[in-house]
Amino acid sequence: MESHIIIFDTTLRDGEQSPGSTMNLKEKILLARQLERLGVDVIEAGFPAASVGDFESVKAIASEVKKATICGLSRALETDILRTWEAIKEAKHPRIHTFIATSEVHMKYKLKMSEDEVFDRAVAMVKYARSLCEEVEFSAEDASRTEIKFLARIVEGVIDAGAKIVNIPDTVGYTTPNEMYKIIDYLKQNVSNIDKAIISVHCHNDLGMAVSNSLSAVLAGARQIECTINGIGERAGNAALEEIIMALKTRKDYYQFDTQVVSEEISKSSKLLTTITGISVQPNKAIVGANAFSHEAGIHQHGVLANKSTYEIMSPESIGLKSNTMVLGKHSGRHSFVKHLKDLGFNLSNEKTDEAFVKFKELADKKKKVYDRDIIAIAMEEAVKSPETFNLKSFAINTGTVVSSTATIALESEGKIYEEVAIGDGPIDASYNAIKKIMSVEAELLEYKINAVTEGMDAQGEAMVKVKSNDKIYRGHGLSTDIIKSSIEAYLVAMNRIIEK
Ligand SMILES: [Zn+2]
Image 1 (cartoon, rainbow, N blue to C red):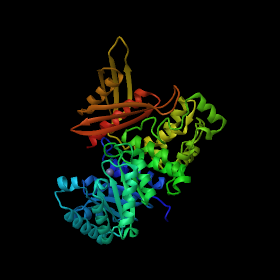
Image 2: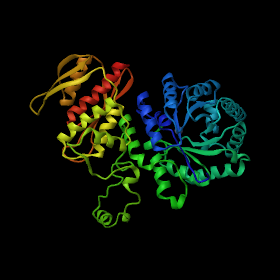
Image 3: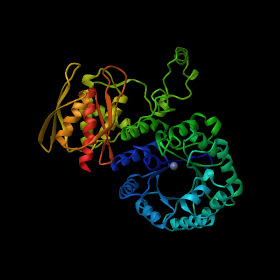
């Protein structure tokens, strides 16, 4: 299909590599499942040779995902490629992705190899990968800064060796849309066997041009785009999946390409990633930012009320943002709650559904209107939560302008109750000190954030913390209409993770 653009998601590989985005196995599987619902064609699940943990998670995702192709990244080394194959071979559609740098600066200073040596290695490793796996992708790292004739030569060589996909990355985010067009066009014109492979692009956003560069490449003949949810990734990140999808969809009249992505799953995918990593997107971020669909200026509001198309080029519903209607109330039963969870795409275990239902009931008692966003927040919270060594039993805080803050915290662990009192600089600090006393764990609080899930005084507060212990970073997430409680829960999750280690 000439008009079909293959969407290759690398949130779990390039994205996970970015600062503070490390995910555990459970979180990776959860995200992989969501990527499958989103309808991406290829999931790059990780870099199996990087560590045992990476290997295990790629392997788990390979057996979990049924529709999408599962791809593993490997350097152009036999050991890496074999390790990747071991991790992905159970996948329904496995793909080995191998790469080597081809730009002069990389070959000279990083690889210390000549053009011929790089060429021979690339060809040999693609052949080796093909001996294991039917589908092999080759990437010429730093392609956009590679001498174009050499790039054409190596692309021709790896296609001859059996690569079905050739990826042209703008590894350092240096190129411009026009240049990207010319590179792809040059390969189309000058590589004799180019029709035997799919051309792919992988653009970084250092100059804010990753999406534009990807779309230019497609206009020139590329048929696979590598991208990530929320544009996360090394440094300034990768091309943002949601922007690519909505550009192709909204400007179908111009691009005339199709993807199999279900755009209505975009908002949820973005939110899930934010919940897992604790990295939120800026409010004015295209497509998934909190303000992306709000009209503030009076004249704009007036126009939208008269006719949406005056200022709205796409609808919030098209990315899965339901209008702000109250969906369930305090009299809603478990049955309608479960049905609603399913409609929102959540398939929680019975136990987690029970817990989510209890939370929903508590919320419906406190909050006048329960929105979809509330239910999504509760379901996400349950979905990423793991059983914990210490659970919150109760807390009492005394704070004010004339007294120093004191927190009494009771935690439960294996049927026993542990209680401690601590003072601190404010109620959160005091609570965290009490928890540290109980768990006797040394940890440094690096980051603390609190966000309201919806508008209104009775909104749920979503707390996110990052703590450091023994040079490792742990994240935690908590949700409650009481911000002290969500802050305590977020900290407890992170501290429990340290103990598990
Ligand atoms: Zn990259």
